[in-house]
Amino acid sequence: MSLLHSNIIGDTGRELLILHGFLGMSDNWKTHAKNWSKSGYRVHLIDQRNHGRSFWSDEFSYELMAEDLAKYCRVNQLKNVLLIGHSMGGKTAMYFASKYPSLLKAMVVADIAPKKYMPHHQKILQGLSELNFDQIKSRNEADVFLSRYVPEPGVRMFLLKNLFWKQAGKLGLRMNIEVLKNASVAVGENLKNDVQSSHPCLFIKGELSDYILDSDALIIKHYFPNAEQVTIDGVGHWLHAEKPTVFFEIVSQWFEERA
Image (cartoon, rainbow, N blue to C red):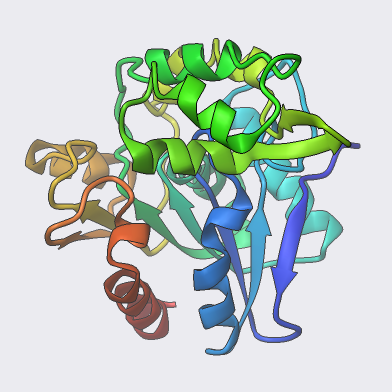
């Protein structure tokens, strides 16, 4: 059985699992995890399949990623967990809440709705898939090459966190780009009609992001009748990184009051 890789921060406390977004990894959340570990949580930073240090597979869907998370919980004897999912990780959390309700206590979904999204990562995926590490010998060279496809320095910095030294003088990507470059449709799919949950859940939107629209309130309530919604002003899709203190305080207070 393939098991998801995790970095567990904290020895005791309420079990809090965090799921990163598409093309990300668990390390993106390390600062938040350290802060929550000081506040009475045992934090599991989890790499989803084909990302970070977790296993690679040709199969890629939200149903499978939710099943991966359920296996992780069972192997580690976790129940009534608290769950945070950003973007793709948020949709994994939605499926998990519906399919494995006994394992979950409450969840926070960061800047994603249970609707269909059109593929919009094509240039990024093309650039990552065309990185030739027989020719590219440094992070700076990778950055210069990727800038042809991704002009935003901040986005490139996020993506290039996936670089690692496979061996002396040989870079590689932690993500399974050969599978992920064809995964835009799967990542953007809407929730199936039977994916519903009455668990307490909080949807957090970035004010400047278009991932959650005002018109999405009804569809969120359809799938998650006990959902609450809040907006963080002045931030986009990476709201947890753009205003980390505000995000941390909102999530912490909500967990304390409702979970």
